[in-house]
Amino acid sequence: MYEHILVPLDGSRNSKQALEEAVKLAKQFKSKISLLTVINNTNFYYGTGAAGMPPSMYDDQKQMAEKILADAKKYVETQGIAYEATADIGNPKNIIAHIYPDQHGIDLIVIGKSGVDALNRLLIGSTTAYVVRNAATKVLVVNAKD
Image (tube, rainbow, N blue to C red; front, side, top):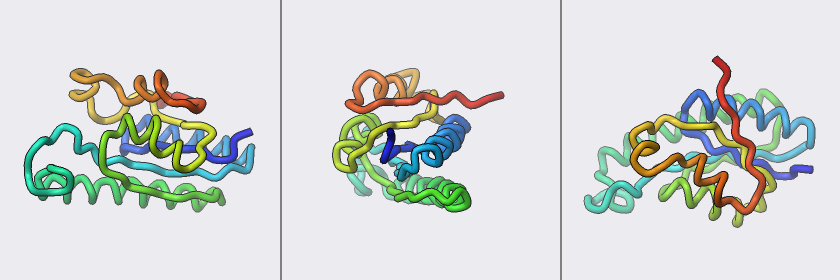
């Protein structure tokens, strides 16, 4: 039913729970998983770093993204699931809902209910809500258990 599952990761409890759910589905359907973390540069309009982000902030975000992916890869490997892992830079909403699924033949996006960026969620809306409303593929939203 699902050949290729996208799991956007931001290090939050909800995204970790989404990964666990995606692994269950991947085992059931013998699916491949794409692990994706996106460095959000859409809040920066000046600077000299990657796409206008101040260099020190980009370096910090890149290290965090690499750590998130490394942890996720370890988990997926222990579960025996085929996967690919990508860190991207740009608008997370657009990359998760449109660009990555279109370029990689994604059948299902498994995403956490909300992530770590509460201020942006309050000011400009949840990435998850955007993905649910705009993705051309099926979306499963996972909420971490208390």
